[in-house]
Image (cartoon, rainbow, N blue to C red):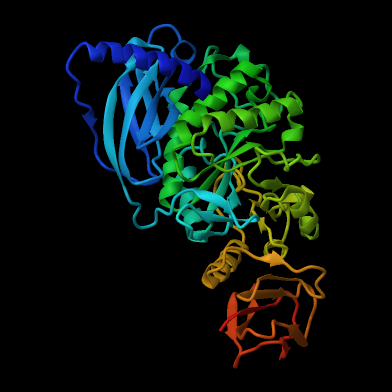
Length: 518
C-alpha cells in the first residue's frame, strides 16, 4: 500500500480512534527514549499473522512536530510483528499515531524527543550548488565510491572482509544490488521471497533462470533476507559510507528480473518502507536498465514515481544504463548515473539535465579477458582526475581474476588493485580546500576547473609541460602547489600568485597544479 492509500486508511482509523478516546479519559501517550537527528526511530507492534500480511494488512504511522505531519509506511517483519521506521530531520518533541487496516495495530500513540546530531552524523547527502552534493548539515560531500554488487547478500566471511577493505581504502560510497545475482559456487544468505519448491543442488548462473513464480511465492517476501541486507546498511553507515542501492538488474539467476508489475511494485514499497529511514541510503532504480528486456520505459518511470510517493525523505534517485542513456532531465532523477568515460561531454550534459553527474561505471581496474575489466591502476586514477576537472564525479570498480568460488571485488571480496589509495588521495585534496565542488572551464587550453576566486585546479593529462603561464584572477592572491596524482605528493611553491603567473613545472605527464586563495 502506498502513502496515499495509507493516508485514506489513516483518516478513517483516526476518526474511529477519536470516537473511542472521546468517550473516556485521555490516554497518556507512550514515552520513548531520545533519538538523534537523522537517525532511526523504530516502533514495533504485534498484529495479525494469519492469511497473508504482506498483501492483506496496511500499517504505518503519522509523525508530528508542531504543524508538520509526515506519513510513513511500515512493513511486516514476520511472526506477527509489524514495524515502522522514521528518521526525524529536526530536533524537538515528536509524537506519533499508528495507522492500519487492522484494528489492533491502529491508534497507538506516543512521543519521543529528537536531539541534535553529534560526531560523524552529518545527515543524508543531498544535491547542492546545482551540480554537486553536500550533507544535510551543509558540509561538502564528494562521492568517491566503489562497486560491490553482491555485498548485501554474500554473507561472511566475504562481507566482513569487503567492509574492512572498503574502510581501509577510504571509499565513501558503494553501489550494491538488493536482488541477488549469481555468486558462482557460493550461495546467497537467503532469498528475498519465500521458496515454494526445492532448493536447486547447484547455483544457477546468470541468465539461466526460469520464471521466479515457479520456485517462489512472490506474494510473500522473506524478512530474513531484508534484515540481513539492512545489517549491512548499518555497518556501512557506521563507516561513513553511502549505500547506492540497485533495485533491479539484468544479472538474473532466479527470475526476479521478469516478475509481474504487481510483484515489482510490492517489492519496491517493501524495500522503501524498510530502508528509507537510513540516512546513507540512495536509490538506483536499475543497473544497465536497458538490458532488462522484460521492462519498458513506462515501467522504469513508474518505479521512480513509486519511490517518490513512498519515500518521505526524498533520498537521492538515479538509474544506470548500458547502451541507451536514460533521459535524466525527468523530474524524478536527482542526478545522472552513467556508464561512460567521455567526460568531455559533461558540459553539454550539464546544460541538458541541469543536475550532478556521476560516471558510475568507467570500466574496471583488473586483468580479466573482457575489455571493460582490465584497466591499469594508472588509467583508473587518470579517469578520476578527468572526471573532477570536468565538474563531475566517478566510481571505482575492480575485476581481478580470483580463485574459483571467491568473488571478485566488483561483487565483494578482497581489494587487490592499486588505484584505490590514489582515488582517496584525490578526495582528500578536494576536501582540504573547503569547497563544495568545481566548475569546468569553458574551452580551456589545458584542462582545469575552479570555484571562482577561491580555487583553481589544472590537470595536464598526458602533456609533459615544463613551464606554463596560468591566467589567474588579477585581484586575488593565491598560494600554489604541484600535485603528483600517482606518487600522491603535494609540493608547495614559494610565494603568492595572481594575474598571469608563469611557473616552472616537472615536465612529466599526469601532474596537476592547485591554486587556493591565500
